[in-house]
Amino acid sequence: MLILKIVFRNLFRNRLRTALTVLGVATAILAFALLRILVGAWYSGVEASSATRLVTRNAVSLIFSLPLSYFERIRQIDGVSKVSYGSWFGGYYIEEKNLFANFAVEPRSYLELYPEFVLSAAGKEAFLRDRRACVAGRKIAEKFGWTVGDVVPLKGTIFPGDWEFVLKGIYRGKDRTTDETQFFFHWDYLNEVVRKTMPRRADQVGFYLVGVARPDLAAEVAADIDKSFRNSIAETLTETEKAFQMGFVAMTGALVTIIQVISMLVVVIILAVVANTMVMTTRERIGEYAVLKCLGFGRRHVSAIIVGESAAVTLAGCALGLAVTVPTARRIGQELSNFFPVFHMEPGTVLWAFGAALAMAVAAGAVPAWRAARLRVAEGIARIA
Image 1 (cartoon, rainbow, N blue to C red):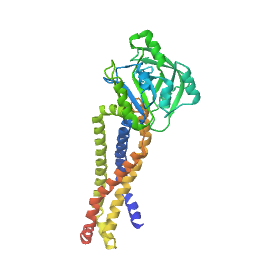
Image 2 (image 1 turned 90 degrees about the vertical axis):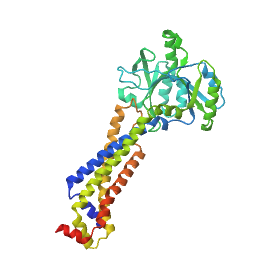
Image 3 (image 1 turned 60 degrees about the horizontal axis):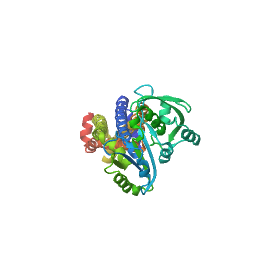
Image 4 (image 1 turned 90 degrees about the horizontal axis):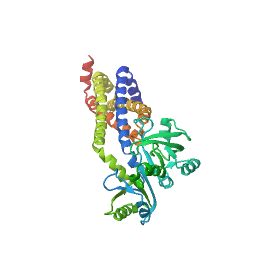
């Protein structure tokens, strides 16, 4: 208890230095946490993937379509429990900067395959009944101020023209990792217009979503699907939803690695900041440590005082940095919702930050504590004189 009192008093002996050190640690922790959140956001689609969903696309590239006639053949394959399909629409709202994920899908089967999209019974019924209806995620609806019943105009890019949809439902995610920025509408409505304006592109879909009865059947079902369309005019590539999402992450793998390396460098910055403070503090208090030894304090007690002060400063800065991270991440998440649908601090990030701070606190205080513990009483007293 006495050692804790000494540590507490020492923290306020040079308040400016302590405040600046805490602020420096807090800034480093803020940067560290935001970088970890960014990495987590990059993998959010992978983490939210279902083990019982497969994605079938054109084997050449995702930009090439597949015939609608594949639907029945896929549904008849053993192990397939449900099939849906859709196309990436690629529209934007009013201005090109308002670009978000929007799809034309087969509505009933799509909602059945994604139970994590929680939609009210009334909203679901209204959506299924109206061919011009659409459903939007909670975050995207809040961003643009949409409410149920609004007419939402989109400017098409892949399917040129001015499109209007009636918002019949706003879904929320079943958990925090669910993407709440999607916008989807009836594929039949899209196909009906395409038949009139671009007949060659009619009855074509961008992808099939396949539900399997059990996760262990995924590999076998995927192989059977691709085998069924081998040597056809549009061969397929079927993979688990997780592998499909990982394909997008792999495109930016080098960038993710750089971010992870930078986050580790931030930990080194924390070490440098705290170590510098503790070295200065120990040098100033050599005489005091000699007096403490004269009063009966052992090497362990002196070391505990120094390491304790290092830990107190570091953990205080860590707590402040994490407290600032929460609103900062929320604000950044709103601004980057088009690119990162899920952007929030996970409990693991908090544990990483506190663990890194505590490790650096011990490392920063170790050398000064070792030097103070080996200090001879006569040498310390001589410095006072």
